[in-house]
Length: 254
Image (cartoon, rainbow, N blue to C red):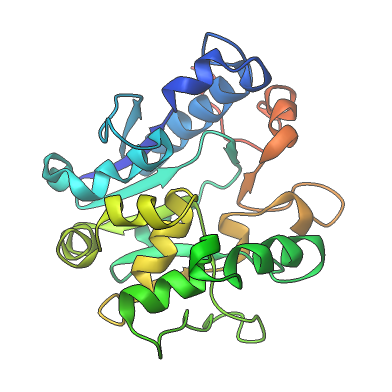
């Protein structure tokens, strides 16, 4: 098996002082080093990519190149992982038996402050760029996001795009069945995570849900980061460098 860990750095963030300035910031370097060390553990290759793919749209959608560009078909499985994540586990994620893609549902995303954000995104009309309305526009008036298998009490499944484990067959199927990304950009103002969720709602896809320990978000931590892979989004990412050489991240001391 030939497997890859893929990370994408959005080029425009290099000019964003809040994200670290003109060079790859130290929090991102910590995320890269963690992924590189984990790739060695798993016997996988590692690629840090920042080249544009869709020159005419938001660069945050460029990470979908592993789906749309068939040059990546040389890999049996590709783990796409955000830079703001530290990998604590030595368990080989590529050993998990998956369908087309494996991802983690954002438990709690429909509740509290997170839920307010979701309702403002999901439940407004199409002219206000509402996602459910856009899904019905794409797939028919009876369409709705599927329920989560692991977390059925949640309103519906919402997968976090920070960790995506794709099989080759899944990427090829997505290339065939994913709807136009240009049309998505025209009707919404959201990024690749929402696009992926919409497209994977189609019944043709076999989505494997991983439990939250594989992509653990700060509001899910019980006092401290407690996942196999912890996702330090927003300003939490600036804590990554001092945590890199602790039990919260595998690291290469060779």
